[in-house]
Image 1: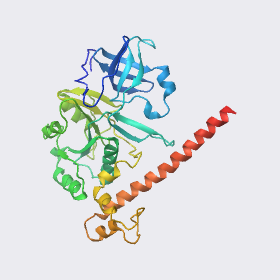
Image 2: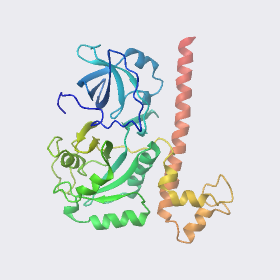
Image 3: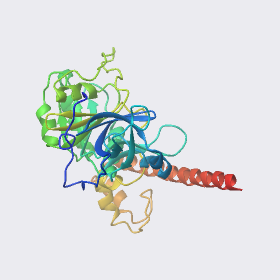
Image 4: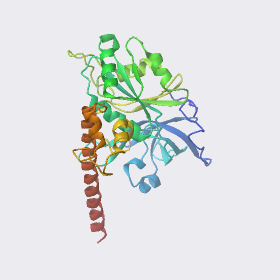
Length: 344
């Protein structure tokens, strides 16, 4: 992205989703395009700027999710507050957020991208398909308020039809697009998934061709792409999240995620819709679907209406979330004890 001004509409602004805030004479509204360690890049009607957090915003933040993320709409000063960098003074309310547990031992959340309309989970047709990983991404999308779509890339290498069949047999109900980012096959499917002003974020494991796809949508070789290893997989090349304007919308490119740990259970019921529906008929409201009498879910597994592998994935995610919730409670208690200790 060059240093010229970019209209709010080109950046994905929609009056249907956002209320235009009051701005003082020395303030501007822009969108976060890149997040650095300790800084940001913004784009908007007044141009492209580097920015840092304003002191008041930093002090008022009570949670890591209060800080700006790629895709956020922010109010910032026009005058530099740190050498040439502007000061971000406020983050507008988000219509969606792609959230996961941050890497590391501490149980804290991380916003991968904000104000995303469609989350494209990119997988490669020539790599072995990990259905549980796909389901994790879909839970993250649904839980964050974005519409998920699975993008099966590298159809030119074969195996795309089999991959699509496996996804459908698993019960994946979101749209599935089969493409070749290398030769442009199926790109029209992607274009139909997000319209003018929409924001598409692409995510997925390393080496599946996310940056090649984004370059195709841009119509130029803007992002670096890696060579292919001997086993046919690509090398990880994207090292940061970045928002880019394409012909009919906005795309956020993300690095391959080494850890795909969901933060909460908000998307589980939508992704595992058949289990959610069956559970309403269980004898006990707190049925765990692990052997209780009158379990409607297990009855449908026995009857073939629910795939046992789907139930196994669902239960595994529930157990992971339960463990995470206990870790969060203990972490928050330890933080309170540390703060209380400093006051005495």
